[in-house]
Amino acid sequence: MPPDRKLDRDTGRGLAHELVERLRSRILAGEIAPGQKLPTESSLVEEFGVSRTVVREAISRLQAAGLVETFQGRGSFVLDVPAPAPFSVETSRVRTHRDVLDMIDFRIGVESESAGLAAERRTDLQLKAIERALVDLGSSAGHPGHAVEADFRFHLKVALASGNRFYSDLLASIGPMMIMLPRTRLAHGYTVSDATHLTRVTLEHENVYRAVADQDAAAARAAMRLHLSNSRARLQAP
Image 1: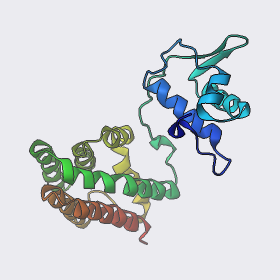
Image 2: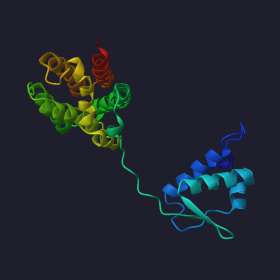
Image 3: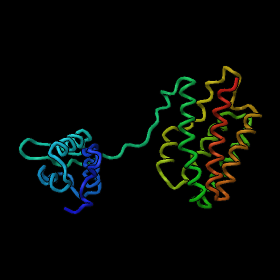
Image 4: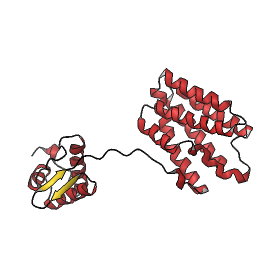
């Protein structure tokens, strides 16, 4: 048996997981088509050098994932691969101040990398779209709704410029609500129409834009992280 076909048995653990990933990859790549029978238990034992117990556990996990169906006496057959579900973050469940802070922490991780990729990959057309959103944000004083829309559009355009659809799909699933969430602090005197706040936030966005325009990935990541970290700090200010 070729050594590269063997599963890693150094630790004696995770064999079923490794086998699941190998078989899942074959199924998703179409190497084992829907309706086709999986290799027999004996074949998998021989091919991967594992026990029958490991093979049975792996097949059980594939069943739980909806990738195969097993018929007594006939074997396991591959099912149609389910259509991928879109990214979705249920903002309706973001209700408390703690939830809002957690959402910003989540965005820091996602959007900092998104901005770095945007600096590396953006096109001139995508940069123009980011710039338009920035201009709209700067001119939205006195119009909270416009500020929210422009702010969200800026972040979405940066994500689109990353060239990775998962970033933009995720932000699109959250929607402008991710900008409106700080309104949980309205009782403390914070409003999105506050001129000082808008000036500060616009400057932070300008720093992100400038780094993306300069194609400086490190600066773009840092600027986005600083902007969202500042947003978090403003939410915690007395």
